[in-house]
Image (cartoon, rainbow, N blue to C red; front, side, top):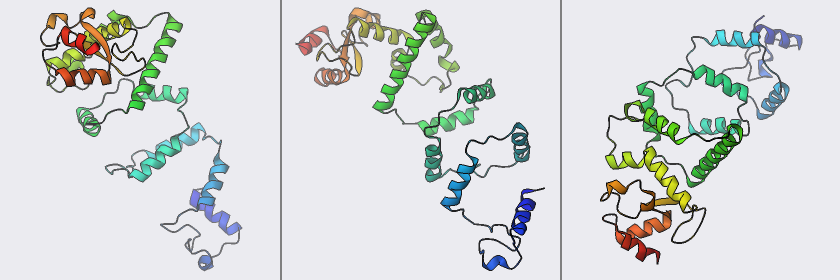
Length: 271
């Protein structure tokens, strides 16, 4: 028996007759809701309460899946309105994805790669977007916690050798963000693994404290004592680096500029 047949049987059992349309203007002569009918919030709440905790059987899910095969989604090639996106976001809020579901998603996506067209679309959408200070701190906290757990569980954090191998495996054409080699040499060096290791070593030596204002917990910058461009052989020398907070670092370059910086300028700035 189809859903429509069940509905009609139910209505007839309740005494529905043709001609009762006047009493129920939102239904047609067969007792079905007319096109454009909107369910009230109260009915929605009752339905939600009735269905809460229920799970579809495997057989039922299989039938729904087969019934939806070949159907074109309503939202295909249509931009989802902001209001709908907000509703979707709010409905998911406070409902973390279970481990079992994450495992299923991971298994379904294993071995799949985005097409170049999809990558270009994502790149275009995210162009110019930056994480807020709050989000960056949150990411940093999660990474630190993960490293701590790894150390407790396995007794180690990813070695420098492994980090170098990982960096090499994702460089150049192997990277998902490869654009044909348009990155400048300066930027390439500053984003490389050697620079990151030098940066971490400088911060660790200075105990993660700004050497000018003596503040800890600020957003830190590593500063080259002898200019980065003029002394390429000292770019990764730990004793050629000093820890400054973002505010102090910007202040230094505002006073002395970005070119031909010297040890004398830094000494003058720190006193």
